[in-house]
Length: 303
Image 1 (cartoon, rainbow, N blue to C red):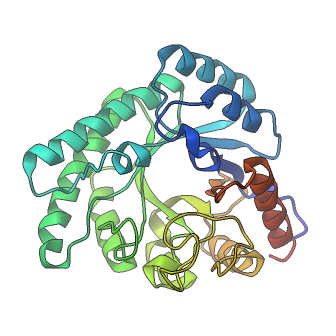
Image 2 (image 1 turned 30 degrees about the horizontal axis):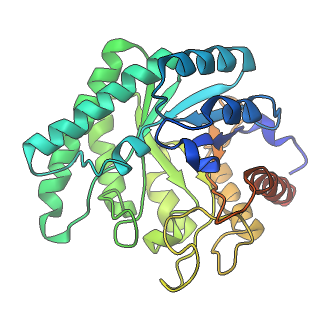
Image 3 (image 1 turned 180 degrees about the vertical axis):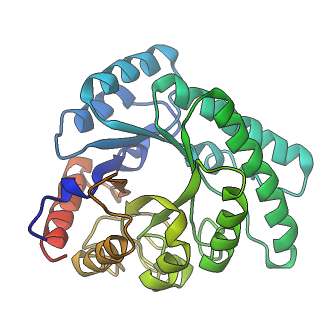
């Protein structure tokens, strides 16, 4: 592609994955967000909960100054606590729902344009019951967000039988789910992630094409799925070029081509496309981020 990638997307970074010490809302939050805010490669940033109110205010001011699109990822609010929004135990479902509502409040407070979360456990024998519970929770989440403003809501598609074991999930179930929620909530959509596609045992086309009309956000990353004995097996988001990894420049090229073909990448309303990458072991986060930028530049040149 000869045209600038910035005509077609707002390139972002999932802050709490690139700097995992911050994933619970503590640690070097302000200084690591600043690293991203001063890097003009990025037009968007995805952050999660920030526990300290003063730090949260400082981050809000910094991001207001940065001219970046801010997205709020509530996935850690569920994953680090083991909460399940499609739990069949009503008390547990309500607890997870309250957690996400608190996240929505925080997302509005910090000026986020969108809010993302994930579904709870996939269990084949009770899949339909869990699906109905997920619909109920999602409708409540969307209505709650709408009552406070115009923030967009997205559910991120995860694996269903390898690591996170989330209900959404396989493309057919993701499509059914998105159709149901969109009937009542036009501010809802799906987030797709290149790193999760091999974990779902689907090709890029199998994962993307069925839900193409509902995709509102995309992630780019890598995974290891060949064997549980291998380093970084599962949903760990290792850097591109990691041993036994599934995704590198070629796969990013294919992913971008599909996203371009379906009109997700476009020049009228360029969407957020974020790297979700994580240092493995003692790897340097800044080097891992530079790795990702090089891969996207190489891939875009071949689209």
